[in-house]
Each structure stands twice: as C-alpha cells, then as structure tokens.
Length: 203
Image 1 (cartoon, rainbow, N blue to C red):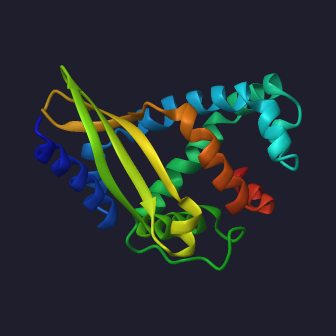
Image 2 (cartoon, one colour; image 1 turned 180 degrees about the vertical axis):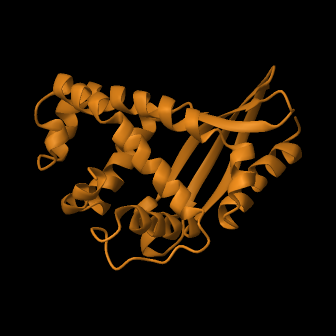
C-alpha cells in the first residue's frame, strides 16, 4: 500500500471520529479486539511495574497490595472496565448527547464529553508504515495543542496494527508498543482523573 492510500485510511478514521459516524468508525476500527487484547497487555505492564507505580502514586490503591492482587482485581473487574469504556464510546458517538452537570450525575456521558474535548485538542502525523502480507504497522505521532486538554495529553508515538479483512478493508485492531505507552498514559490518568470519579465505574 502506498503512503497516500494509507493516509486515506487514517483520514477516514479521523473523519468518522470527528463527524461522530459510528458506522464508518466500526468499518475501520475493530474496537472489540482493540479493547479486549489491549486490556490484557496493559494489566501485564501495570503488574510488572507495580512497585514503581506505587512509589510514584502512593495514593492509588491499585498498586498498594502488589502485582498479584492487582492482577486478581483487574481480572475480576475486566468486564466492568471494558464495558465502561465501550459505553463511553457509544455515548461519544451519540450526536444528541447532552453534557451532564458532573461525573457522579452521569458517569458515562460525562466521560464521553471529556473524551470529545481531548479528541478535539489532538492532531496526528504518520511517521512510518511497513506492510507484510495483509498486516500494516504504522508509527503515528499524536500530539496536543496549547489548550488544557492538549497540554495534558502531550505528545506520544503509537505503533498501530492494521489488518485487511475479507472485504479488502484495512481495520485498526491493536497497539504494538503498549509497554512504552503505559507509563505516559497512566501519568495522565493519575493527574486528570480524581479519585472520587472511581465511584461511577462501579455502577
């Protein structure tokens, strides 16, 4: 695939997100695999670096009791956590979404509104693509603008994997450099996500 053709694929995903076109988004993103596989990899990284993260974020109970307890907890609540993210995504694509007053009044919708603010503050640049058979690995730099949300996100390099399906459509299905992204994204979460918001995830 040429760089121009691949840029068209990425632009289609960007447009689907920007225009809140869930049908187009689903056609080009395998969100189910992306979330389920990614969750397991993230848990492994959190557990492997549990003691380090506990020193960095001593207030976070997730890291207080060690890697084994962390894995047990995350395994037990995987359905809740992944389900929460899926519901936030569905809410984001709802063009009739009305922003709630605060997180606790409507955790899903509030999170979707915050997600929208982050997405509007971000831009991307395709740095490199490599293709092998029906798989493409794309190095894409995502960076924020000068707004609060853009500065909070900062700048990160993602290695995304796209796989061609039977219809010839390239679908985003995984991130291949999760280990290097976990510390960066965790730091954003620890700074941005107040502890009292956690009550909403358990509904």
